[in-house]
Amino acid sequence: MIDDPTILAKQALLEVTPESTVGAVLDTVDEGDGVVSVRFANTMPGYPGWRWTVSVAQVEGDAPTVLEVELMPGDGSLLAPDWVPWSERMADWRAAQGDEESGEDESDDDDDDESDDDDDSDDDDDSDDDDDSDEDDSDDDEDDDDLDDDEDDLDDDVEDEFERVDVEHAAEALESDGDH
Image 1: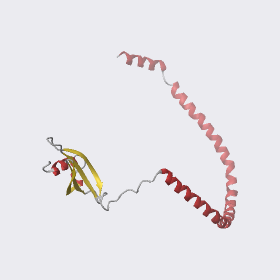
Image 2: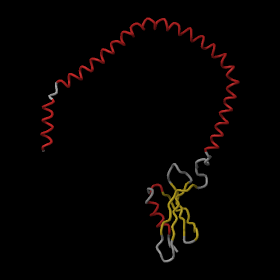
Image 3: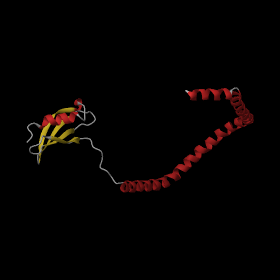
Image 4: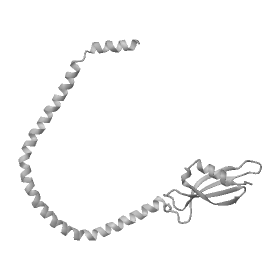
């Protein structure tokens, strides 16, 4: 069997992770059928309680080989929650939506009275603003006409640039570049 699987296990581990993330050897476990798992402490701050595990196998007459290298959770490790099928999550969500809607119907009656009071006070404030804005509306229409004139001016500038280009000279330059 393997004399010291920890050396080969550590070499394999260092191929997938920096040495700074690997702690001391915790233990070796004989998995049977010539397979030994070597567990190392993990020093990555985001994975408390996790362990590096390297499985090494040796078939009689052959050199030992690494089967797998993995980071495995230990006792007290922080884990993702169990997977819940989509259909169950959707059923829970629909039930919650139904509960919210029934709760909103009862509370809507109370909220309507309060919101009506707020709306009345907002209407008074808005009426003052509307009087001022009517005076500015006539100026806005004149400004819109100016924008149309500016757009026409832009088109003229572009046409002027093309009028100054000597097309025949440019074609000759292209032909002479193609000869080389």
